[in-house]
Length: 67
Image (tube, rainbow, N blue to C red; front, side, top):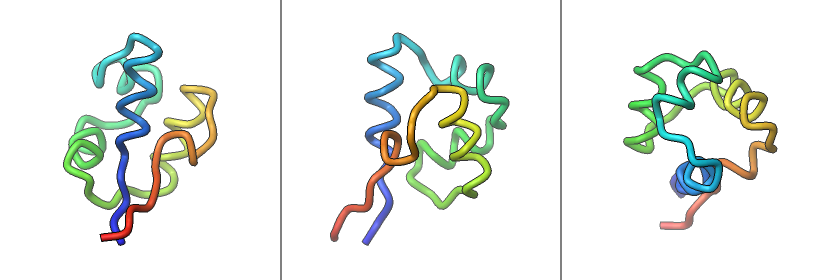
């Protein structure tokens, strides 16, 4: 199983935002955004900051894929 953040990227497109915008509104570091882009593990604190900034639920930005 792997975690996919494709839902996050689609949500950003829907909100007409890019990764830089996400970094600014959420206060998440550039390194964390890079980890998300690579599909790497990220702390729940970072995910919750993103959810708060985008006014969404954690299931709106990530999903578990069976591989």
